[in-house]
Length: 130
Image (cartoon, rainbow, N blue to C red):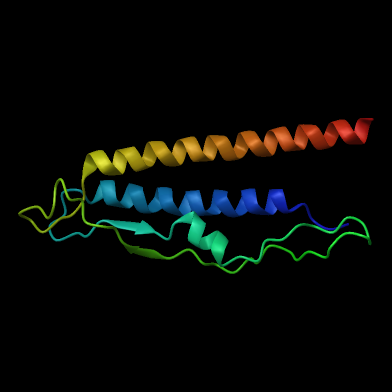
């Protein structure tokens, strides 16, 4: 039986969200560090674009599909300069409001991810019980 790609994709996004939360937390922790440059990671869409995601083949009559490519395409890079704040006098580029907003966005995306996986899992269990 082939693995269900939704679970692979959800796992990949959870990994991406974990790394992004670590980077955002690092930015917040270094908000007062002179010459610290805010960082962010590759958007998840870019990770998806580099992954070979196709439909799973559950019947010989279906088109063939491939597994999710598990290469690590998540890269930490310098964040775009916050145009409202710019570079502080100390050379720091961290905007706390923007970083806290990113943290809230990460939380919402993680909750959506876990909710979808839970719903899909319940749906699969219902088909097995039937």
